[in-house]
Length: 522
Image (cartoon, rainbow, N blue to C red):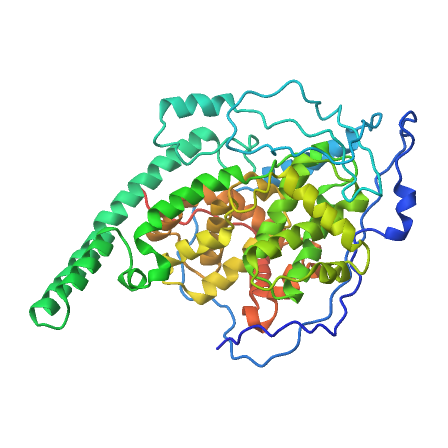
């Protein structure tokens, strides 16, 4: 039985894990406005964070992960080669960018609404392109920002035509953020799979949920006739079963089970509004994707050390990505953006959030209290104080877990895999609900299960939709340096059932995922 997490020990100091050496910031200073950067200008690389002290040892009785059932041999071979090629070419364009003359600065950049997936307006032409974006660094400013912002995301013409042809089937297809098809399917393939989802959901309701509801209703009617159950309570349970809800959850007032469908429909609309620009690194001149991964690895350590809620971590990462989608940030201020985002997320989500002084202590004095507070104002004003619209994958995992009766091994392994996706920028192209579905799908396959109609019903994704992202996740697990990542060390403990060790060993054995032959064919 797992014990609750221990309180953080304030007496232990967190080692310095800053992304840059703040004592050498003068070396990163921008030249005068009239002096052009040399052609041989190279971006400084970020130093990897030092490993943190291990958490206190606790004696807990746990069961390590292992396969529970067996599956038939796989049939169709899936080739993830294009994902590796696209991932390599995606960052290769950074080498061809040439810095231009620094743009004019403002003391406080005005708030800008970041480009979102819900935008349907035509692409703007009054903003600079990626080649026109320039950088001005000022160490006195908490973010090293300019008044130049990235262009809005382009609108996919094929998406608009498909939506007009079949609006109902494409109700859950967002703006095409993955035109290369790295993590998702093409819009035409997505249309076919969405129709399959609707057919599978109808089939599951008629073949599983309705018979269960009728059988439970007959039992309650028998109990009412025998005087062992109140008639009004039986009628209420019948109504909950008619809505496809669990009677045990319906009796829990905090679950508000009667509003389940409306809540998740609303969350599906909100998650599109809170998505970051998956290509925002094209507009950044000093930071690259591997520096973002280093920052998130450090945020994982801070989050774990102070025993914060899982939603706090996901909100913080979302704030970082959305802010970098709207503002150009220098390398010297990248960690400040991260600690400020964690500070905002903790105040929003935690009951007892760490103080500003504790966040200053986390950076080992790299930033002052005034810098963090000023950075908080800039981040919130840039994002128009929009923090509550983000729905983390954890909310969707709780929904999908109903398909296997909240199996603890599957959920623990899924949490590990979802945090691994934070380190890969390719998953910025998909919604949090799909991240949760990919994590649950890979977990189920690793433990010997199948993605049956129940999982399709509660997740609204078929196996075909999840396979591209699932294989990209396996590629991340198989990377040579993955064992040095903090997420691997975190989930290698007995507290988390050694989930990361099991996941990496499974990925190295199987290398790739194939469509299961038991995938329902309609």
